[in-house]
Amino acid sequence: MNIEPIEFDLEELPEVSLNLKEEEIEKVEEPEESKSSEEEHRFTDWLKIIDGKGPESKNRPLRDINNELIEKFIVSAPRKIKPVEGKFEEKDISEDSVKEHDGLITDTLAKIYIKQGYFNKAIFAYEKLILKYPEKSDYFAAQIEEIKTIIKKSLN
Image 1 (cartoon, helix red, strand yellow):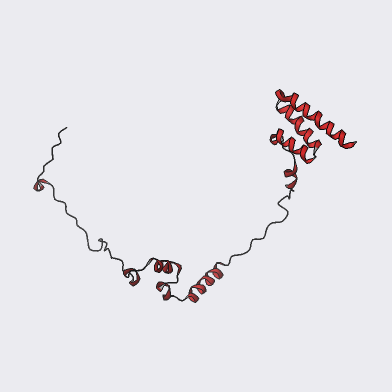
Image 2 (cartoon, helix red, strand yellow):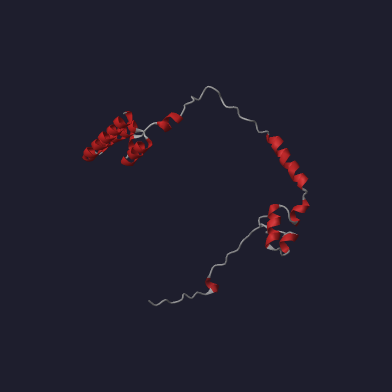
């Protein structure tokens, strides 16, 4: 691939003139840099300036700043919103946390119930597991019978 430069004569280009009035031309003013930005500061000096403890903050006393904040607060006058009574129905959600959830029942949970002495809960868990895993129903039925023998021994 051979790239050739394009040559053109400047004299052949049309002349463009801008007829702008002085009022239409925006004058760009260069921002005045404050005395502190011209000076070199150490890192800790910059942190103090940002926190309002450095030489920049000495221009306005802290008392004036606090008074300004207080005045803004008073002018905005925030009001405390009172809750509307009677619209919401109170519900005791602690009852839901105590209920057994069928999806969370496992063989391990049933064994824990046995160790803790909650034999009825263990039997309930194994009955749910029989329905959930019918292929292991023989194992779970044997566990239920074993729990029932433990209950009989403890009653005697």
